[in-house]
Length: 377
Image: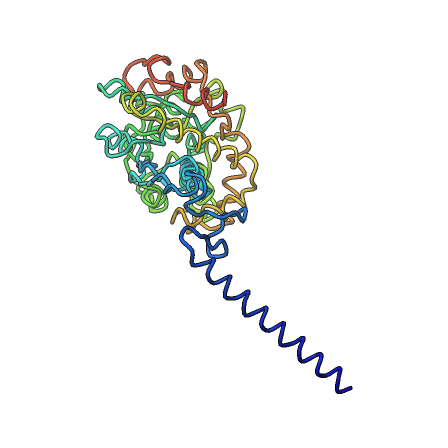
């Protein structure tokens, strides 16, 4: 027993000496010039080292995002396309840092901002892009978000409807109709609807600003009716002061008034900006196309969850209303392809002629080359 203990002790002593020698050698190697300590290097997602000895792409600083500014009139499902693209990270994926600003509920104000080069991208009614071309500011539409306009809707004060004073479009003769601004998309659509009803010269359009102004004007009876988008239509009826008189959802009356699909909300840029910044415009269009694909495939609930923090209007309206509105727009309104053909444009030009002032040809306003470029990749 004693012999075994002595042998074990000698073995233990040898082991300790070996360990000490190994530690000293390891220390000398790690201190040698040019030696690397792989365990201290940061790791990429794949787990490989990202030290300076790796490829140039892993050590080079990230390319800074290009900053651009885009404008929308309001932050609801009618205009929210850049909000979706930003919330989902599509702009960032394309190398863009996009600031989204609001134009006080007015498409004509958006056009003014673009003309003054305060913004680079505008999301609004196509009639404003048409008008800029008549004012010496060549502008091109590079993406079309709608096949049918949700804001081609007439809502009247419910008391006037229930009393029988306004039951048809012709009953609007002599009445005041609220819009966001004169010359904007809502004014354009409202004017076309009443003109088709034969009472165009017998109504007065009143500019009321943003959504709160338009809805407040109807509720307070400052106006007898409003031109509304789907969000406002549903809100006015839910709160009990509005009644829908004409709706984009009614195929029969829509085709009687408009004759088929027309472009509504579109994405437009100044023509010289598009020529000088082709890569930026293409990147923006690509991100927009991704956003439209997401809107097509995601549920309204998922879209709300993704975008609510991008817009106070979306957050305040609440999930229930957002989902209800988006469901309606997904049925007939959204144009997921983004393409705008000449026949659809020409119908829109006919509708907008009274506001634009003269016919502006398709070839002058519409540039689908960026969308075709990304579709071919």
